[in-house]
Image (cartoon, rainbow, N blue to C red):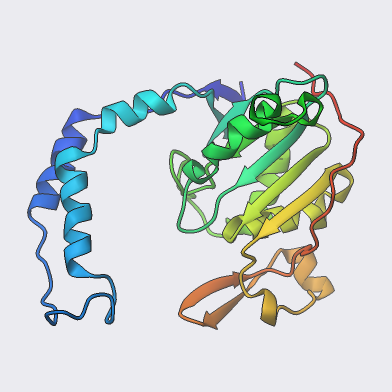
Length: 252
């Protein structure tokens, strides 16, 4: 079976090991009173470290996350973790939410109740969504790629397959940062299936160039070095499309 239940892992030994390693942190020197002028403020980072070491309750966090429906999609040697929450409305629109780099599916969880149950947040139940929040390959609880070529174009095809497995012929997509590249490639290669796209923080958009025909076929991206970070430059559908009002009903 391609889609299987997924149980969030917890290891008391791993937590103890992490706390031991945090306790052995070797802190760098800093110029007194420099604050954030030369980078991360040392005292602030030490407070964060103490919080993770002494206060953060990993088991409680796992229990809190377990209230959601976690699944995994098995395809070849790749295992993709995702959250799948059904909308509470007459005909929910399926939407997949992609996180960025460095990030995880946790970024999107505050959106889930607002999208699945808008009536409980001052909205209309007719505007509800079926929400899918995946962990990109190599992130979170998804497995690491074992071969070269797992770029944003290939990820888009993988998630198009996942949506088919879930019974969604047409769906909407949101992505930010690295996830914006995945969403953009869904629009390029699976346009007939996309109800609408919503993108934010599109890396390199100010310097983007239209893709060549060869680039579109290969799924290649170019790397932009500058402005303090290395970004994946993907020429995407940068316009925010409004969602079509024809709402597909997924098969159960």
